[in-house]
Image (tube, rainbow, N blue to C red; front, top):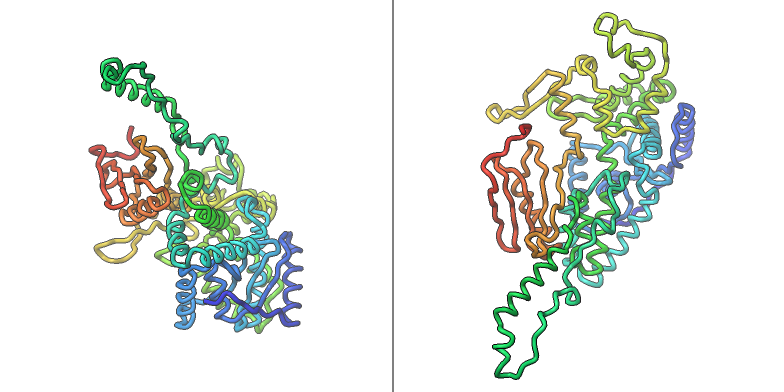
Length: 513
């Protein structure tokens, strides 16, 4: 896949459309970085999309694989990318040259919604606003390492790093848990720190074994070693969720390997807020393209194309969540509720359903409220705060599960509590397991011991074993993880050659004391 792109600038007609859409967006109070639109053909769009929206990144086989998948899906008529925009200052967005003018209008309005969200949502506030330049810099550094150390060696190391890119602490940019240096300091036993040999009495050669008995000297040496080990603080002093940082600061890696690992970690943190706000971000952009297009952007000739596009984007599915649809409807619901004053203690205390249906105080606070929601929430808190029983009833939200006997996804529950609990569970930690470093000097042999905080869902054994093997490549010592399999507390281990599983208890019961 080529990394050289020659994008086209907007035609005069599209420049005029952009100016109108930007003016409408600003009139509604949207606030965004300068936004640059570039026109690309399908092949260029798939290449950029494979790079996560960036025109260039470091070379790696997975980008080529993603490109092939996107290209074939488009060729077979299975998928089409309508809009692509990246969080940057300025923002960059790409328009597919083969789209109709109606699509360009819609995409521009949608993009301005995204750009407003990137700039103003709290969870994006710690991201690098010049990531397009940083990505190019990352690519240049890794290409130099490939030239120096070989493509295969560097690419295999990138594979290893990517296997743990989810093992970060997505909240760490916002929380200072403790002093970083004290937290990650590992007081390794160097030669200078080794215990001194026990003192020996001077004696002539033939008397030495009597004056300085070997057994007594060995026992004293062991006592001194144990006293030194007792002084070593627990490492780390508390469980560490950012496994990548722990490895980065404590593993015995070469300088170029440390740099590559830091690149993978930096990019993982850049993309983390997008995973945390998928429902909100897409819902916000859809809300605004819908508002701007229906009130300002549609001409009679646009109507069929616009409706067809929106129908496809907002289509519901019985097997998976549509973030565009859920986000859009929640924003609309919030706006209507706050316009009608359906909030506060008096509203919560009312148990007359007829009164609630007719409730309207004329508060008209809806628009201010959705801007506030956009600013402070992520998907987890958004759904927790605003997904109500009335909303679930109105939109017929169910909890689905896979029935192995029938081979279909079927409705598991229509109960509001179960629906909301399942959705929140899926959004917690963006759906990833909670993994912590518990001991970086396990058994006092420098081995790495991880802890999986079991919440009812087991780790996939094959994935866990592969991750331990890749951590071994980074840590250079045996790796372990404590988890639950078949209701038993177990320790999975990899010693560089073999995988082992050790049960450490008889039964684990979740939710009981």
